[in-house]
Each structure stands twice: as C-alpha cells, then as structure tokens.
Amino acid sequence: MLLIAGVSLLGGVGALARYLTDHAITALLGRTLPWGTCVVNIVGCGLAGVVLGATTYQSVTPQAATLLLAGLLGGFTTASTLYLEVARLVALRRVVAGLTVAVGTMVASVTTGLAGLIIGGG
Amino acid sequence: MSDTPRLGDFDPARAMAEVAGPFTLDVDIEDSPPGRPSRPTLPHALGVFIGGSVGTLLRYLVVRVTSTQDGGFDWTILIINVVGSFILAILAVSLFERYADKVGVRLFLATGVLGGWTTYSAIIAGALLLTHLEAYSLASLTLLSSLALPLIAACAGLALGSRLSGRER
Figure 1 (cartoon, rainbow over the protein chains, first blue to last red):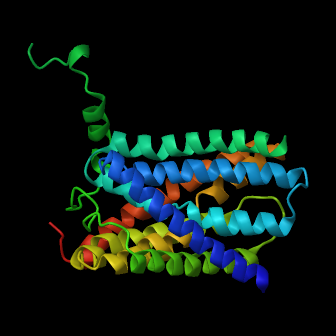
Figure 2 (figure 1 turned 135 degrees about the vertical axis):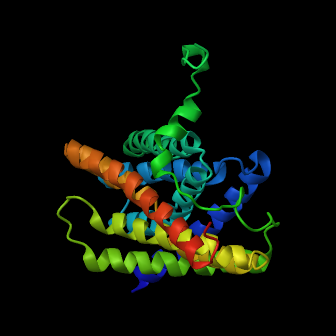
C-alpha cells in the first residue's frame, strides 16, 4: 500500500519535473519541433538505464527500483505528448520532421538507456 | 523535356509527402499547440503534480494487476500508451482548442494525467531487459510496435477529434 502511494507521489514529482523542463527548453528552442518532450524522454531513459543497471547488480532494492522506474521516471517520461506532436507534424504534412522526431527520440533513448545500464552496473 | 525529373530537383521532404499522400491526415489543424506559452504558476504546477500522481497511480495499478513476470512481450505498457495517445489526440483538437484559455485544465489532463499514465522509459527499459535476456526479436518488436501503434492511435485521435468538434472540411 505504501509502495503504491510512493509510486503515485513520485509520478507526480516526475510529471512536475517534465512540465518545468519542457517549459524551459521550449522557451529556449521554440515550438517548431517538440524539443522539450524529446529531451525529457531521452534523459529519462538514460536514468532508467542507470537504475536497471544498479538493480541487476543488487545495489538498489526491488522496491526502490519500482519507486524510481514505475513512479519517478514513469511520470517524468511520456509517450502521449510525444506521439501527439508527431501526429500533429504528420497532419501538417511535415512527415519527414515527424518521423525524424519519432525515430530519433527512440534511437537516442536506447543509446542513453544502454549508456545508463553500463554506468549503473559499474 | 522540361518536365523530366532531374536528380538535382529531388526534394526529399516533398517526395516523402507525396509517398505518404494517401496516408496523410486531412485534418484542419493549427500550426502550433493550443494555449499560449504561459509562465508556470503555483496552481498550474500543483495541477500537473496531482494529475501526474493520478495518471501514474492508474498505470501502476493496471501494470500490477496484469503483471505476469514471464519476461515476454509487454502488452500492458503498449496498450496503456496506445490508449493514452488516442485520448490525448482527441482532446487536443476538441476540448483543448475550444477552451484554449483554460490552460490549467489542459495542463492537468494532458501534461498531468495522460503524461503520467503513458510512459516512455518503461518501453526502453523493457527492450533493454529483453536484449539482456538475448530475446533480440522481441526487443525489436517492442521498439517497433511502441513507435508505430501509439503514433497510429494519435493520428486516428486527431481525425476523430476534429470530426467531433465539427472542423471537418
């Protein structure tokens, strides 16, 4: 029960951090492409990799891993906003830009995730 | 022949748009997301926090209930992301455009609830775990499906949402 409450609260913290990060990046780079959402997801996946790596080598307990992965980073990263923005670009006939955002975010997130896995396991 | 295509004329963006033509959405859409970029205020931050907690709680409960721990394909997160992307796209071109001045509502529902409900890190973490288990085809399937299906759902949501709000051309 305590774990469920903790996951929920940390999800809120993650969402708030995503909101503030996205706002700061959008203020800097504008809205032509969804930079904020991309960066949040790429960074979040890198951190998830660190937690996964640390969990594999048992330097993080399963409960802490759940709090961080399902809660904090689950709330920090998002798929709905990312794919809404990509669908918006497709609808505006900016298909190349849209697919670049979708594929680019995924490739970059797998890369930071792998890097995080190595750092966390080390 | 002036209308013979020359290599120098090749415009990748236009070519892609032509290839994708039949599949492109015929949705009358605003060029930028609705809602003026407003400075974060305490009520807005609180709305995002509460919405994010609710969305994350719902996702975690669904994941717990459906958890099988067989190390196979993670259907739950995929379906969660598809549903969340579909609902957000519908709302984006209906509710959020009609009430563009209600920034707080959009932040609570879109950034908070649906942002917390859907997740990106769980997909990548799942794919990394499958790679670790040497289940390479399942890992690739995870990445491909979690890119394609929520995107198709979001496109369908935009089309449905703009019909619902009567902005059909």
